[in-house]
Length: 383
Image (tube, rainbow, N blue to C red; front, top):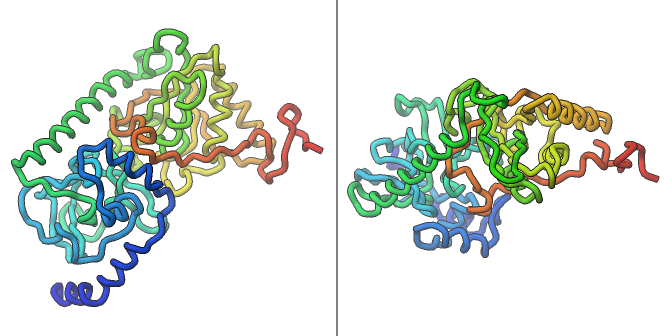
């Protein structure tokens, strides 16, 4: 039956699917050609071919039973074709009969899961560069892990076991993990270490104040705050939950209680806490409960984590103001707890890759929920 299905796809479906790949328009969030070239130059891999770019950058799908690695049974490591980071090991590959390479386990921290644009499936992307890999499915019973990563061959490069290419990829992984450990050691402390429960110590100079907020995927939130005058740094991380030193995979499961959050360190002489929060409420949708756009789950909730009574009062005042303007605010206002820096490959993600800047600004404090303008001071409609 497997051979019959393969023959059918090769003779009938493949030409049509290849045509679709070649002619498919850019998917939402796809990069301009100039950005693609810039991205590729930052990675230790050759430039992408046209078909590889369609899959990795524009989320196209290669035809089933045509991939180079579908029947590859050699020992080694599959690395991202764009950035060269390890994705899967050969011992975790299995035959599913689906027409694409299948794996039941990824390299720890290598793959990011995001809701697919079709609203039904779960897309998988390279956690380091954001390149599209394929989709992940659970509950099918193919292996004891009950998980199938369905991956495009065009998204990967196979590095044979013991080869210089595999050694280089694993060295990059070790370097990334070392940076992650150093980052976590510097940014996460025990809940009793300071009055603000696990916040990093204030930086030198005027960068003495911090704000911690959660507004969906932390890539875009971090990127927005990094561009504000008076902000010294913005760090992506996890907070608000009960798991100590969580990994990205832990948080993605949705059972740690943590949210993807951003710690903003700023100079209060140049920008106030209230200005930070006002911007926060403008760049995400505070009316969405446990989600932001296509990202669903408690880890994507809207929240402000206050450090003291003054910050709490500011957050409450702004939420009350938005409610007066007709917004059904779902933002949680919670005391700050331990903040754990996310893995190094999440930090400065948008600046490094050109992806993730998906937070659009809406002037919520100058317009009502129904779109009518208001006066900033009184809240009355403008004439």
